[in-house]
Image (cartoon, rainbow, N blue to C red; front, side, top):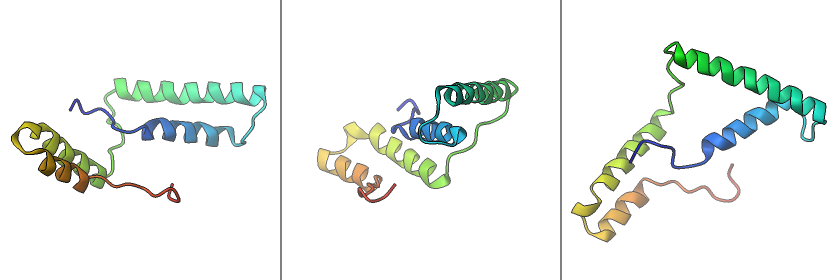
Length: 101
């Protein structure tokens, strides 16, 4: 309802970005500290851009549209019966199989 993320995708994306920044699966402590310093510099640059008024990268239109539809259904929870509410939510969810990533 507050426009916050409903998944941990941003955390997973951050972890993946940091892992690719390191370039190895099991870094040495020195490489890890160097990666932390690089990550800190990148985050600092993002903060400065945000303060300067730069807009963040927009989410994909299909995710944005699904979030809007789902929020509309959740906001109208009290005006419909439970089965209709659950059907509306179910139509706006996409579940991945265990094989997909």
